[in-house]
Image 1 (tube, rainbow, N blue to C red):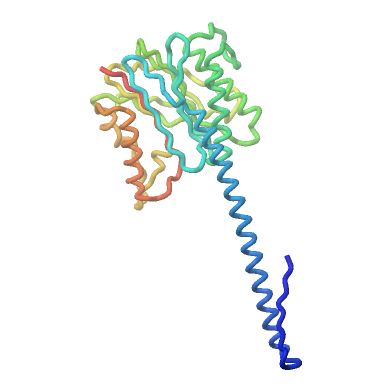
Image 2 (image 1 turned 90 degrees about the vertical axis):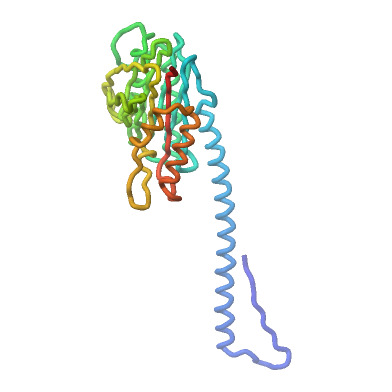
Length: 304
């Protein structure tokens, strides 16, 4: 883009001095910089609008990976929520039906944040759900492939080895709690791969903490994962969450404590409304500060 500034004095010859010329040159330079800045700003705004559109598509796609309707076996209540810190999330949860009327329960936190974590979130989620429904072995011992322990071991081991060996150069991994619930007996068979220990809560308070059974998934090939079991009895509530909950800080720098939720979880409020109440409580605790990390919660209650 080119332009000219033309000054004409029809009454006087040589009307403009060198200082006038220098003044106009300075003015022309300033105008050209302002015009170029405006052009670049407009271009930047168009780029940001296009980027926002791409992120919106990403949000919609990612939302499609989360179950819209959670299974609700007779005598049970299941609820989950995810509050992303950015446009897309690295956290995820999943609740899905398995053979023999069993229910798969997953909550996970992919390392890092943003678009990269969101892409790996879809990979982790897809592998776990797919392998849970096939009789496939990933360097594990022999068996009939149909037991809860086999399904857990197959899904986590295959996912771990694939991520570590195929995408090891990225340094990406995820902390994952994966449990298989038998609604008829209340037995929850699980692997906790580096995730924050979920809690089992009853009217008296915290009944049991479901500790780690192995390292984060995808960090190293051929990692060993132990299988654990716990019984969810009538009146018990299982509660799992990601570290976005406990990374929330107030203006004094004090972190939110999940232990304060135990009395709420021991009550009779429906789980869906309870998770909304916890979200509001966390927002109020942060007093308007920007959310630091994704906050995901998964709750399961066996009714009396």
